[in-house]
Structures are given as structure tokens and as C-alpha cells.
Length: 260
Image (cartoon, rainbow, N blue to C red; front, side, top):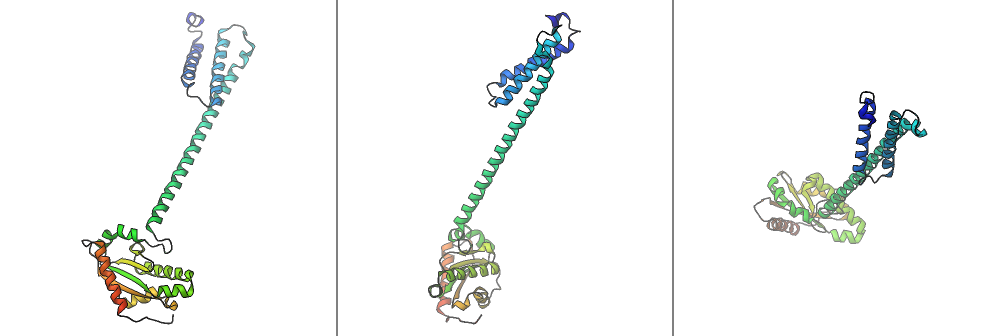
């Protein structure tokens, strides 16, 4: 009634009343969702400050002694609201960062599981599964399919120990990665390897010397089979053809021995 009787005199008060109405309306709407107690109390403090400010403007005398603190309560409430919002935002950021970290860790785990499923643990080359999964595109981009089998590997493994046998396989795998693309080399069995290449200038003896350079001292050799890569031919047929070439190579040669 006071505001309506003297609208010009109480123009500032009317504005404060409107802001109080807005603040109370927001508080009522937010109550079901405000789970953070500090923010709730801060908003109530701000509204109390607005109410006391209205009493200051409307009362000719100090009706309530605490009216002197109306502005301080408004400022305190506003600061607490800002602090509460900042705390909530920081908590949400921490939650998002934790979720992103968990997603990144899960992605790394998925990548590792995928890598382990398609790669040989000892040599790091692709395994038999990876070979057949990539067989057709590799055949389409390659001229030849090579099949390798280590000679006397079992004897060297028994004589020098399994750790030397592992070193032999790793050395041969590294040498193959240098001669061929690492993505085109596969270990498909205990001492059997497959490789795809576009290079038609490879010579058998030169290739054998490169693969055996680090392991020849253990009496190990390698038999090599080769066939033309043809994506229209069944993978098992091509591997069989290269395998036959390897066995023919093994049968027609004597054990090669040489000093490093």
C-alpha cells in the first residue's frame, strides 16, 4: 500500500521489491534441485538481506535493529552464492576430468587388448589371426608372399636353452622387419614366419644372410619359400604354395654353417 501511494518517492524501493520477488521465485523453483546446502543457505541469506533492505526503506524509524545489517547480509549472501557456484563448477570439472581419464584408460586397455589379440607377444610381429585378417589387402598391394621356416631351431633351443631360443626368434623377427615392412611380417607358428613384399629384386641367399646374421652361430638356418601374391586366390591355397616352396628349399639344401 505504501509503495502504491507514493510511487515516485519509492521508485528505488519498487525495484528492490521486484528483485526480491525474482529472488524468492528462483529460490522456490530451485528448492527441489538444490542438494548443495551451502548454496541454499547463501540464497536464503541474500533474500533476507533484500527483505531487511525493504524494511529500511519503508519504515521511518528503526523498526528492527538488525536492519542495519541489511546491505551486509545481501553482500554476504551474494558472495556465498558465488562461492557455492564456484565450488559446484569445480566439482563438476573434477568429475568430468575423472571421467575423461577413465575413458582414456579404457581406450588404452581396449587398444592393448586388440594389439595382444593380433600380435605375437615374444616377437611383436602380427600373429596368425592378424595375417588372415590382413591377407587380402596385403596381397593386393604386394608382389610376393614369402614363407620362412627356421632350420635346426629345436636343436638350438634344447642345446642352449629356451632363453636363447627366444632371442633367436626375436632376432629373426627384427631382421624381417628391416627387410620387409613391420606391418607385413607375421609369426604364424613356433618357428614359421610369413612376409609380404612388393620388392621383386630380393635374392634368396642375400635374404637368408640378412635374416641369419645374428643367429648363425647357434647352428640355425632358414628355409625360404616364395609364391606370387594374388588376392583372388584363397589364402590357404597361397600359403600352401609358399609352404611347398619352403619344403622344397629345405629338402634341396645342406645345413649352412658359417663364422659370424
